[in-house]
Image (cartoon, rainbow, N blue to C red):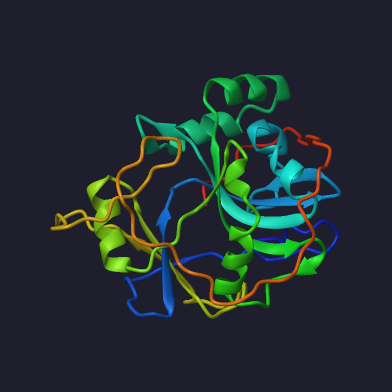
Length: 255
C-alpha cells in the first residue's frame, strides 16, 4: 500500500484488523458501512478523492464535490456508501467505480447518489492532526457542520459496543468498528482499530436502532461520544471552487 491522501506529503491510511468486540470506556464504536474507503483531500478549494491504493476516483463521485465548499483545506478519512433496498451495496459501488466517463458519473450521481460517511479528520487548514487522540479529532470533526452538505455525513459514534453490535445484526449490517479513544492516527498501531463481524447465529434481545444513511430514521440511537477536550483552532469554513479530477483505471477493491 502506498502513501496517499496528502498531496505532496503522503500519509499511510490506517486499516482495521479483525477481532473480537472490546469493551470498556477506552473504546468508541461505529457501524461498519461496508463501503469503499476513501481519503478526501481538499486543498485550496479543490477536492481529490483517492482509494487506499492511491487511485484517483474524484470524477466517479461528483456528488461529494460540495465538501470543498464547506472546508477549503482538510484531509478526511471515510467511505462511500451506496444503498440497495436500504442496505449498503458493494455491487452498486463496483458499478459506479467502473464508470470512468465524468458525464456518465454525473448522470448516475443524480439518479442514485452515494453518501460519504466521514469518520476522521487528519489535517485541517494546514494543521496536521494525526498525532492527536481520536476523541480530539472527532470533536474537531463535529464542529465542521459537514452534515449540512447534502451527501456528506459524519458517521455516528456510540458508547455501548455490545448494544450496537446487536443493532447492526438485527438490521442486516455487516458489523461494528471499534477504535481506541486515546490514540493517534498511526498505520503501524495494530489493534487500535478493530473490525468486528456481527454474529449470524444469535438474535439480540434489545437491539440498538441504527440510522441507515439516506433512509428513514430507525429510532433512538445511543448517545454520541462527547468531546474529550478542545480540538485545534480553525478559521471559519472557506468557500472554494469545485474541480473534478480523474483518469481511466480499473475499479479498486472495496476496503
